[in-house]
View 1 (cartoon, rainbow, N blue to C red):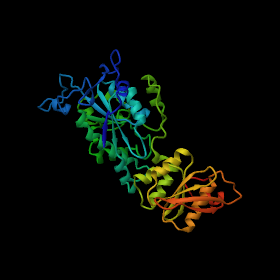
View 2: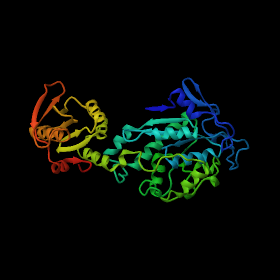
View 3: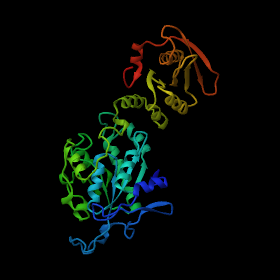
View 4: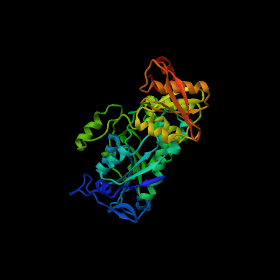
Length: 396
């Protein structure tokens, strides 16, 4: 489901407030106005679908005598690279809008903040279903974690390209840098994204363009290739220097942003994928609590604080067992899967272990399945050594 610029009115003003004087590209920042419920910039050109329609009808390679209003759509992560890429294109006098993507594994929050600092219109696209489908068997494999980066980038480019005609954009830009990431940003991987997305000729990478073959925006003269860059490799020095030159002082660190690259989360997800169970509820559950594998088809999730206890209650399905210690402060635990008496006893012992109950005596733990009578067990807390063997994701 696509959401475009549906932000509170005050937020709209913050993102698109006017600035006095010319922009670095020679134009001016415009206050967004609302038309039929949608925010659009005052300067938007809506006279033609594609700027290349304005080129000499005889096929001449000469540039048109009249300056064509141009718009690019930036795949905005919110990181420094995508901010710089956007700024480079803005500095050529080209209007830019931003798009970012959401799923259970990442949000568009950083990108929204970046759009505010850049003064551009912003869109979000939900790609949760595509990513969940990819995780089952990504055509180009995983990175170090459970991150199918190459295939994910293909999805993002396709979704961004589908947005282009709706906002009258002519090409896409990203902050990718050749060689910055060994698996997803090597020359082969960049080529795969271009080829399999079907939009390679419209996909401009301003930070590393001089290391790559010219794209249509360059050959058509929509952008000046000489003003693009040739950054490559893993060093961040060129980007940091450029940020300083452009007056960009606030930006997030390169790490983070996607849970699929997190080692602990990835171990939990791999455990789930091995059993072929993957849906929105299961993914949300991975984000909460301590996880234990109690059998081939049963697992326990133990809340770590009041917020997680509440989340576990919200994520409980009708067949799940909920466990809680009686008479002592402690967590709520959720037991899911094929449950027998031994599994239930072990789950109760683990729940007891993370409560305030004394370690040297038996404690009552009660459990309940939705719509059924509450029952109780008397158990001893499980020993740490056995806990470590059952824990999914990391040691106790």
